[in-house]
Length: 337
Image 1 (spheres, one colour):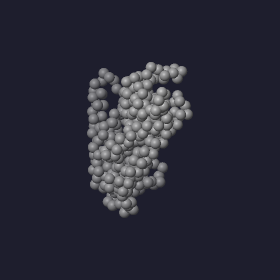
Image 2: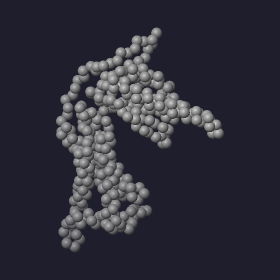
Image 3: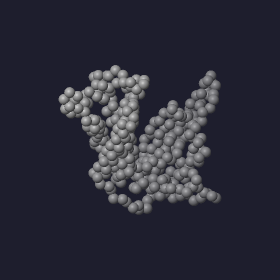
Image 4: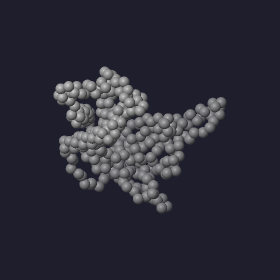
């Protein structure tokens, strides 16, 4: 006996709202956390070099010019910015990125100065202390590749400044990875928190591949026509789902999508040459959400992705689609017994 159709949901039960976090205080926490991870990383690099003089992580290079070690150190140093941003729900905007960009440069300079001060260098003839800029210039000019047996090669001279620049660039670039990744995540400005993303599934946008005689022009033309029809049908269904989601028609959304929602159907669609991937970035607090689709052609490394127009999703639909279920599957349609 068929179950009664689920009525469209138009409202979401009131949810406890958390007061917005002070933006200025949150940004300060992000900067402080980033500085802490930067300091801890640089201290670890320094202690490692003191433990084994042959280990210079910042001096690791690929293909003689890619500062792999500096990138890794910068990645670890800048991880605090991204972690604190996610934890506190602080959006990383362009101003904060510019601030984060400047801090690793200052941290690199501070690390060089602290290392210089720890050496207590003096001139042999006068016993006068060596100045920092003289040390920095001499150390840069003395850069060289380490040859076999741990023997230093010929100093680079003025070319040492090129590798000094590469080192600083690698350290700063690595430090920006975590903040830029956080910056690219969907964010709810009203609730001051990062959105979550729910994978809704796949839509078919092509027919299954089949073998045909290369000399059979009629068969190949028929297959190409079927592919175009399937692609148009898939994109039309995606547009229809966007309209239903924007209108708050959860029953209509489920009805339009349930044909493809079984696990077996999803596996079959995943094997198609072209399919549409559905995602729902949403705010867990206010359920502000959008329906996002990407047209995926091919598989593996040869896959090509084309982003489709997004559609706003009514909060009621977003709340229903992201509601936890106790079933063994992750379907978004109602089941009957």
